[in-house]
Amino acid sequence: MFAIRQLLLLIATAMAAAVTCDCSQTLTSQLLQTVVSAQPNDNVIVSPISIETCLALAYLGAEGQTAAELATSLQLPQAGDKRAVAQKFGRLFEKTKSATGTATFRLANRIYIDERFQVSPQYNAYAVDQMHANAESVRFADAAATAANINSWVEAETDNKIRDLIPANGLDANTALVLVNALYFKAKWVNQFHNHTTTRRHFHESAARKVEVDMMKQTDDFLYGDFPELDATAVELAYLDTDVSMLVLLPKSVDGLADLEAKLKSVDLTKLSTAMRTEEVILHLPKFKFEFELELKPVLEQFGITSMFSDEADFSSLLAAQEKVAVSQAQHKAFIEVNESGTEAAAATYLKIVPLSASFQQQTYQFVADHPFVFAIKDNENVYFVGHVTHF
Ligand SMILES: *[C@@H]1O[C@H](CO)[C@@H](O)[C@H](O)[C@H]1NC(C)=O
Ligand SMILES: *[C@@H]1O[C@H](CO)[C@@H](O)[C@H](O)[C@H]1NC(C)=O
Image 1 (cartoon, rainbow, N blue to C red):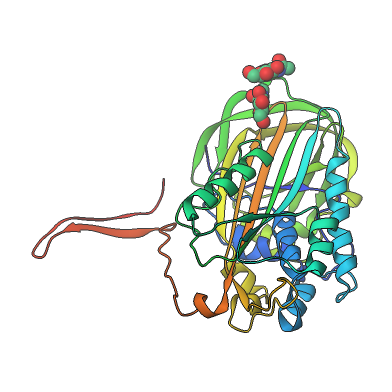
Image 2 (tube, rainbow, N blue to C red):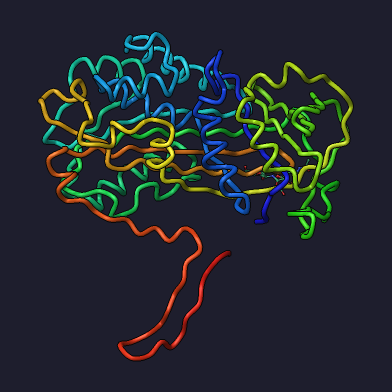
């Protein structure tokens, strides 16, 4: 595994974003700004569509300010018309099934609901019938077993690429619902690379630092574009048996990634290929494989989705009984492998929903040491060791 700093790799799909947009406002551009470009030294992959679909499941049970924020942020069609929203995401489900032959594309939704509760008939009609999100009755009091149950569903849907989505201690007896989305994609390149043309070559992590990587190589016709306004060039690699492709955007300068990502906030990535032409390209692309995990709550709050996390949350059309609930946790995990044959990528997102009464009294604190930290090994008198951890 190596750091990819010059490359911003995205799976561009025909379905990935709203058709028209003020692009500085889409979830994709928000993720680019607040997640991808915020971690310049880490490989990052997130799935906007998985997050969006999970939020749509929440929207279908939301009312008032909670619903309004989700509708605005996600640029939902005909905001207020939940049937139209459910149908839009239902079509996404159908679209993934249209990949045939050698390509696999799978999007799945599921609702885990505590045996104390039932979803409302209206929610059932939208989420279950249109978005194919079956509701499974579970006992969250058996927290570890239920987490394992949910995780094994996610593993099955993602061909084992997303494991342990929910930590064993991630649920508790108080949990009312968990809304889950899983996305899996595997396809071969139309133009596959030959194994024997892959060689060890330098990859410049920065102007000052280079490492050796397995660099794939081929010369063929690809969609290619030069974007002076982005100070970058782009190539698009098509996959077999699907209209999904991978767009690779490469800054012209070794240290150009941050500038490029800043400019991309006003670019609709799904539309870039219309400005590209088929050209013969000598293409060098490193093989890579990594996963990335993200706590979504701060990202979504910056994006204007705050109400659903607060004691003002309004999910009054979600449950059959009038129980006030709010989202207490939102988590995302994604994986990608790119090699000579093609790409395998997966993602999963979940929202944990808890009764309001309990959630904000029994506030739990998280300690997620996922960034540089200082440590000390000590007793009441002496510090035996001290240090910090900044990279792996
Ligand atoms: C390349 O290697 C992989 C695994 O080693 C193998 O599955 C694949 O068939 C090879 N491809 C070609 C074109 O030889
Ligand atoms: C490429 O990765 C896939 C999994 O996504 C694997 O099945 C295949 O063998 C790999 N091919 C090569 C050439 O390494």
